[in-house]
Image 1 (cartoon, rainbow, N blue to C red):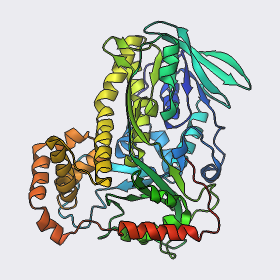
Image 2 (image 1 turned 180 degrees about the vertical axis):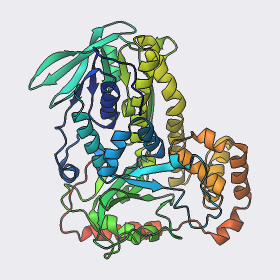
Image 3 (image 1 turned 30 degrees about the vertical axis):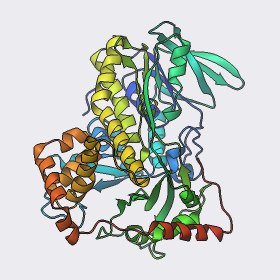
Image 4 (image 1 turned 45 degrees about the vertical axis):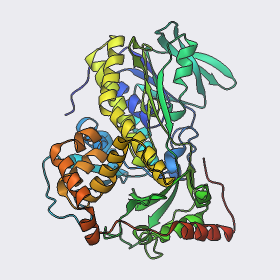
Length: 505
């Protein structure tokens, strides 16, 4: 039995946004007895999960029809604290993805160890995950859904540290005040929280923002009746070719998606928004071609866009506690509204749910003490989520440099790039200790520093850095098509397309 948290009975909360962060916040607050109103611009989920996948319009979350994976940290959290929700996800077709059971082909000597169960991720479509969460929330007696309007500002007592008391809600051509004891901003990467707080006289919110330097393209497929998923072999299902990153994402109901991520420095690859160009390039990559064999799968019909495109990808950190304390009371920003990272690394949904869970823990720890609640939430997020923001920034900077043919100017950055690219990347395909550390980092069980600063892991990576040529002779780096030839073939394929649908932005 999951123990009951301290009661918030008699309290009210407004959650701005009905995506993963908002739905998780509604669950966290609702199970504590608060009366919760979720304000979401979009209509409630369709009765049928497949219909929601095909038709849902999520203006505030264009990423819903891109590839997703729900990391081991999230699955472990659901298993421990939200078991009913985990059972509902599994009943809807979510898959358990065990990296220990499917290691890279050259790896030998990998045996199960205590803690490996935490490394099992969940594979399903983002729309399936949201659909299950929405229906779970809809059954909570003290949570209601209000759609069709948008929040245009906050209500409260102004000053350098405003006390928030509600929101200004615009709907049906008018504006009305909605009051609550707590306001949660879960409105995603387009959150206007800094402006809202400034309008109440609040101090500036500390923010760091950096573009990711990539755009990515996703297409969904379904396995044919009787067809089996390809088995991992010499050709990886995910790799970085410098000018192209690619990955297969296994999902629910015999579906999977392929994402191709390309640098902004290669504008000709915008042609991947065309379905024929996308499939042409994917079939040129050995690790993807086996998934797209005509006897194995077919594209999913009925989507408004055959290929989904997404640009404007950013890494952004917002801290709502500074040296003077909380920048606002009775207010919390969760998920992408606070920590937004390149979605290519698959951490967004896990970070969002984890952040909402941290809010619940902060409320339990400092019940009714709003300054202490804000500090406790900030402390947890700073320790657990923020290291992955920094890792995303470093990885994206390195990817942009490589795509542009540059080398790091500072020796520390050159050493770091060599350690991870030429040492760790090779080691994780051959060394069980490094591979397990990599899985623990990728699944957010450990931060990058915790995973790779351990002497045993670091020394093994340095060994492979020193003896890289020897191991590459046995296990060459993943290869893909030659860049210029691939681009020209994609452009030729797009030129003969009977009809090109504009991709979503």
